Image (cartoon, rainbow, N blue to C red; front, side, top):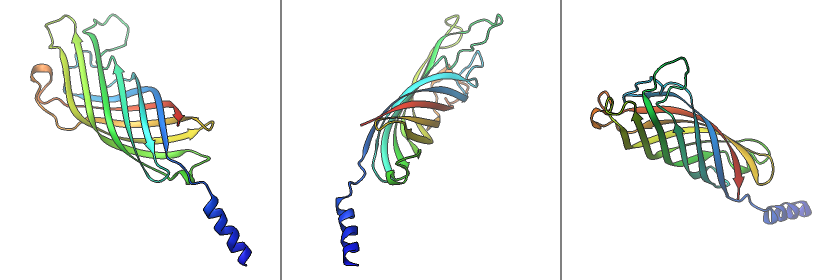
Length: 201
């Protein structure tokens, strides 16, 4: 009995604790389900658009972590349809840059499988749009406070490389008046669905 107890004590003392991790994650995906009060001459914000982004995350071996995430959606106000419809937008984009708190399953539970997580926080949302012909609709170039909430899962293929799946809701925090660029206060929200390659350090 004493030998068994001694063996258990040695295993606990000598066991290497799970370490915290840094993740660097370039991502690509789709922006969808957009809605805004900003003048949308081509009625394109509700359509799907490619997005590009990334995250830098710090995950402890327990429940909590932190991350900075960014998503860039070019052509958010552009209609990508053919058929002779006139182009009313020369260029457009949305950008979000958020600092998030992360809640995730403990590392010891998910070492050999997917590690689910949820995260949310505050940050900057930038909207820009140049119209055709110039002067008919006002040019848009605004920065507003926004928030995001989402989640997904992370799984590793090798010791240092894995995959992250991420679905995230973005919205302006406090709608505000920015002149004639919108019908009333500026409101903006959309959903991003992305996949990325995780580089673990």
